[in-house]
Amino acid sequence: MTTPDIAARRVLGACAALMVGALTLTACGGSANATDDGKGGKDSPKTSTAKISISAKDGSTGASINATGVKVGDGRLTDVKMTVAGSGQTVPGAISADGRSWKPKAQLERGTKYQIAATAKDSGGRTAAANSIFTTVSSSNSFIGTYTPDNGSTVGVGMPVSFTFDKSITDKKAVQSHITVNSSSGQQVAGHWFGDRRLDFRPQEYWKAGSKVTLNIALDGVQGAKGVYGVQKKTVSFTVGRSQVSTVDARSQTMTVVRDGKTFKTVPISAGSPQHTTYNGQMVISEKFVQTRMNGSTVGFGGEYDIADVPHAMRLTSSGTFIHGNYWYNKGNPPFGREGTSHGCVGLADVQGAQGDTQAKWFFDNSLVGDVVIVKNSPDSTVSPDNGLNGWNMSWSAWTAGSAA
Image 1: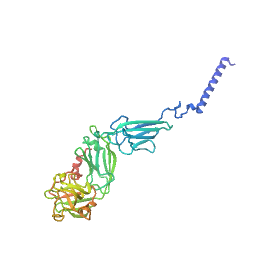
Image 2: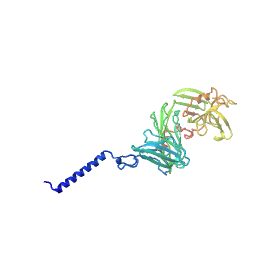
Image 3: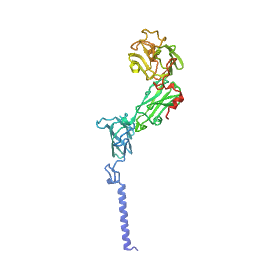
Image 4: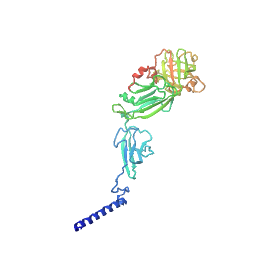
């Protein structure tokens, strides 16, 4: 027999159970108040879960000119606008195919103030935004290395990789260790410092003909001196062409061109006069000009000569030694191959205007930047290894002794 109190409690319990069930059914049925309509429903986040990250923090200075960009987590970028602060000039850039990142299309300028405004959406369509105004590393606090050869070029077997930095480098090991040079030939490549602004790389012997050389520059952010940081980050590659080594004999006044180990041609030349002898040694063609001006006053000869249209000129030293065409030689001089009459250059028979079928034009057309020209039997000294791209005049042990890595 049930007492009145017990019966009452059972009725109340049943009612409570029905209420809980009703609540449960309402929740499963998707009440409008519980869904996320992008306006902040009570069971969903009111803000976007997309997290935008701009590499250059707002208000920062010394930002990278290479690595500055935008990334997003838990979402996709919808718009990124980068401008030069103050002028409003737009900096072109592109969002990646997956919408997760954005970067400028070109390297930024040093010492420049920029602004980035980015927006993104998460999977629920909620928008997030981020902004940053920053300044890139200044010229006074950064260094750049001008290098040769150029990306995609084809060069001769004697062409070194040569860097000239616009600031003095005190931490040579840090800088050199962030530049790597590798050849498909498998040749060992070593660096050598000439002073504190120039760093060259070469193998022990000339590059193997037909090999591909890859230069990886990872100097962005590397401290080269106190308060001075690198800003370069790129990969460069070049191809070594056929082997050509030409030997100038100052005694016989001839030049023998050897192509891939075989004598290609021997031509008469005119080397330096007894008063202005030509350097001995291995010299590398570093520049080529169909015509150029040669003024003696720029290389210490005063007003002895100033020729506005020297034809088929190829530079061998930074101090002014060229192998070039000579159209004025025949005025009172014996034929080429008889006597040295120059101020230290190597002359080949040519005509004014760089036209016609001449010895100089033939050699010019058959030469590459990076080809080797060896001078022997001259009464002069051997060319200094840092006078042009002429590190081949240094023994391998001396070369590697000048490495900081």
